[in-house]
Length: 402
Image 1 (cartoon, rainbow, N blue to C red):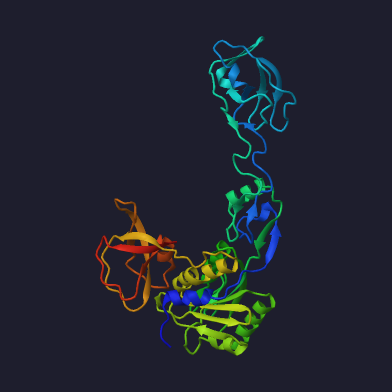
Image 2 (image 1 turned 180 degrees about the horizontal axis):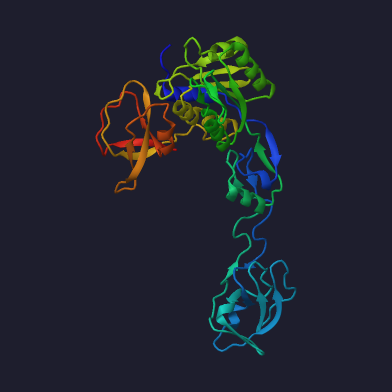
């Protein structure tokens, strides 16, 4: 089977990925969720002309040199003045309060002299000064938030201001994560000299959660069919939308993941990609559940999760831009040799920027896919296409920020 190009692999993984069902949540728990429907404003904001400053509501036509205005009342925020401002009158007003009938200007308190006879404005403001018109922010019926939007704090605040006590969002896709291999132990557990600490699962879980999914840790399966099948069965029982295995995706004598999944009924889509790191990646379907078998090397697993699992989670959340190009332009800060037939994702530091503001990147000398320290120190992945020629410093390149 020929190696599959990265773009083709992503297309196949996202093909037919339907958004999860709709749930309704309140604004307090909506951050990080993805809107399932457009939201229109249920009210106008502000619903009335309001003061933008603390001061006095007056008639602009009264503002002439030496004028003294009689204060006839007060308008705090949340309690409107019930009367009308007539000639020679003013109402003490505070930020956010409705502008009284008859008034068309607010003079701020810092420019007013106050004595027993009334107020003496020292600055003659024009009509409309320091007043927020009704609907300045938005009007009832305005569509302000679109389906597919990942709700951040600002969007949640806007939804609340629009009057929405309940927001339609997509259920968080459930992603079951299974580390595999006799050589793995949990952090803090006693390890034999021939064992290592399982680390990939924590990074991938973080990527899932950051993308809007729900990561479920299935633990570590040993290198035998019974252990793998038991874990896969648990994932199916919990209704996982995606099962992600970590390790065992190759074809060695002890790489049993593909065989166990096939025995369980998985329809294999592909299992080798023309990329570095991360060539032995499994993709398939087990009924309604999508399967991603990531490589065991830490950098390979995390890079593959960034390129394929994160877009899949976003697609299941209903994000219309889930498969969008995540790269940005950069400039190579050091010479690089020609690339081979695989697309390379090179760990780089951002060392500065050029005269146009593009980041300048320098590759780490060692790129081994087992080196988490280098990966943790990297700022970005430099994407080198298959068979890219040797490149000198200053060459335009594309990067994915980490």
